[in-house]
Image (cartoon, rainbow, N blue to C red; front, side):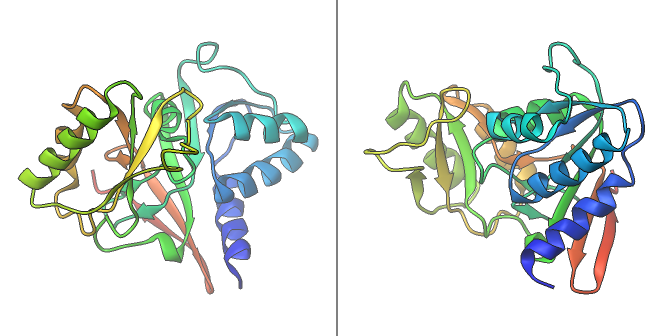
Length: 232
């Protein structure tokens, strides 16, 4: 089973949690897109859902495939969000934001009663941090914010390259008009402490540590899909 087939398996398993009439947060990224394709087939067959997309890219795909969409202002409380992850640990702490949609993804997840993560086995880690942590920042005061992130990380014993996504010449800009700094800290032994430290920096809009948001993870491997449930 190749990587795409595993993503499809996870997305198929997640569909079992979608019920008629649900208000659904719809994630961003390659695994979430497989879910959108399968969801669209169910909608075409008569399933009634209203979706809130976490990115312009996801919105375009949903509209193209006929999945009904509303804004989060129209549906401010959601039943379920289904989204991918760049890393997930055994306590369902996540790193997200590889696709650049972390702010909207976190807002939608927080507005949902439940969040289900769909991923393949390669995303499961004992400790977060092998994947560079995306930190969404305001373009104003970028250098000051970068220094503040470095200092906050140092206090927690973390160091590593802080790279502006896209580089100075072709800087990546999020749907919200912000930049992303990818922080290669390596192993992050205390994700909660790092989240608090990053939240205290004025130039940081949001970060890719998703803690106490996911309630369930569906992890697909060569043998099929397995479920990890949150302990909290």
